[in-house]
Length: 307
Image (cartoon, rainbow, N blue to C red; front, top):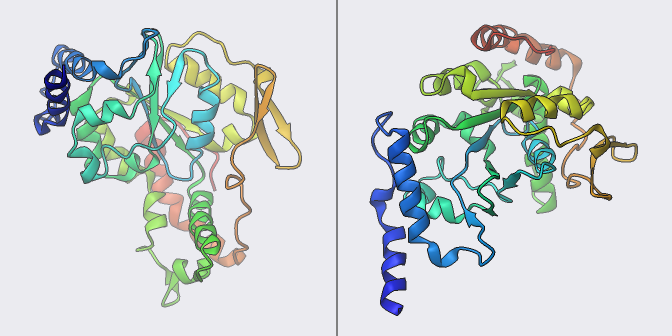
């Protein structure tokens, strides 16, 4: 028995489980590999018949776009099983080198009828990720939640700022990042993450637009139920999430969730106030994103209410 278990562990650890061919991996091959992986970790199957499955849906981003809120809201649906943590399988080389067996082991236990979902916001802006996801499953359904690019930049800064504050480390003002030699600092990474058309072009090289549902993050904050209904339809889920699952928390200033009589809100790190920014600098930010936003609208065939 010990030898059998050791063999199973060695099979999971084999590096050849990582698909290296580009779009050649067909659905039958994917199913065969997934079946083999399930066999390899059979000792981890739950006694009630549930099992870990590779995700059929991934929330690919964007960072500070509302991915956690989207995942929590989607988890209200009884047919959704969501990974608790950001897995970073496709964008971190250390994780990717472990292969699909390791990735599968990070997924929640679920029933055959359930949809397994994982979210890692960094996927959207990581150049290698689209091809790697496609290699795993060319038919996968992708969710992308986006906010006004300027607001996303401010949220990006705010998160890093508070992380430093909690560690009692100094952190420069946002102006020091946004301005260099009197001009907008286009090398600031947070700006690059908001150039949605650049990253979207990379994803569209491997996936048709019909495989990617874009959630309006600004609308999700203001009125979450209609946006979640669209996600349900895209994922072909039965309409189980209701308006009664959401209530506005006046103290926090955003919507919270109500599930089976239990109320819960997002972590206190969500929805933090942005730093005060000089209006002239804010206008520069809006102007900078004007043309990139137009390119993105043309790329996806729809517009958003952004500055």
